[in-house]
Image (cartoon, rainbow, N blue to C red; front, side, top):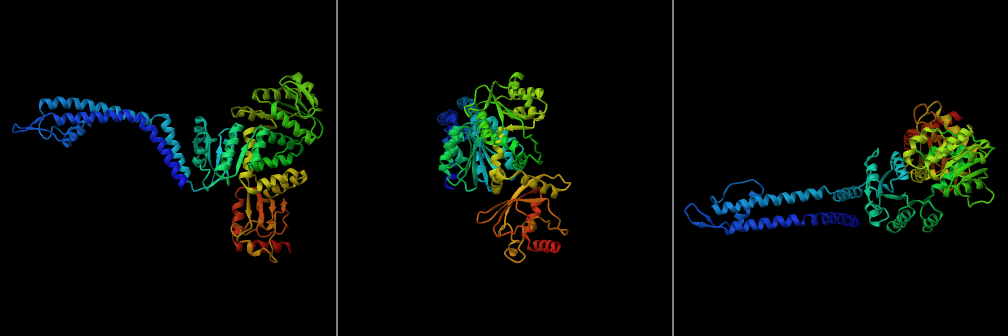
Length: 567
């Protein structure tokens, strides 16, 4: 509360210091004009009806000047004015009206000043953040990654506060289609006070995402957060190995390197296409299908890339033993035995040197969208059967890449957002993704087939969620645990309706309280108290499941029905 009070006082003080210097001259003009006008009326003698001389008191003079300056005009009081008083009143009328016009114009000028308006907007935003009642994440940077991750979180009911130093991007964020009003602070996220204003020290702050385009800024955000709010997790973007090591040196919770994630994604696409497809459906709310490529086992890949992406793909392909030819302006410093062709890959001759006719696929991963499109169009002319992977650098190029019918598009912002979302949305999801890395393709295929079997002919939107078998989440299940009627995983996947049909839902992961992890547990596996489960299926099925596990009578009915069927 003390921190909140200090923040409000500081912002109010900043607004006053911006306002007062601009109003100093108008206020002085008003004071001087009123003082001279009042003094003149007090000193100039008037004539009473009986012919005697009288002088206005300071109160009477102030009253006359006040209604004259505001053009109300109550008349000449307490007696009709003399010629001298009328001449002075002419001066009073013109001078005070001009002074007021000057003062009002100055106030309007200050109020309409962009800097003052931004400060007022900032003040109101900070006030809304401090009045929040729901948990939130702070997202620093509204580029491609920030935009995507905020949208992903919104679709999962997770609220966020956005910080960006660019007014145009901040205005775009405010106009985004959200289920709630997004709080946007225009400021430098690397400044500690900006993080404090965004609520980093609030008990409701669940974490900070450092997603700006600058490594040093992300590093500074991470260090400031670690000191200002040690309990708050930090997820940072890093685009160099040195910066990654720096971030990890003080235990930054999550560090996402988009180049390394992209390289790993490509190896998974080639070596484990089913795991690749399942991963993207789980971590991307926009995906609602599982489609995987059948990549031929024989044949090499052509990688057209430069700089750091070329190095990370080279490392990943060498590790995965994927045959490839690198096409780049400069030879890679990683690996002495790699096949290399100098060039961009935009010319057919260069691609022919890389044996395009024998290749199974091509990656266009340069820093220029025009070059990437040229590479793929040229490659398709040379070999129509190629698997095409494109790198999209600018969001404005999205319509072209969407219409290009490429097999896969690497979008840096989306790659980062997917990785962040996997760690934010459901605690068990990232744990399952770790299991997915080492899971045989046959088992992944079994998971997909099991869900398709339960879905039948339906094509609903898919969603994942987690639950715990404890008194809070599953009070209807606890009475049956550790008894002769101990429930099994399959008992949770039955609709509590009268027919007790299977729900369009499967269990992806089960974690025991002792830390044991069971990926894709069988339906006959017995449940234990405090088990945590990750489930995946049709959107809305989680509501039916929550109804089932919260009511002991419904769950007992399901157990009896299943035991009777089994018997």
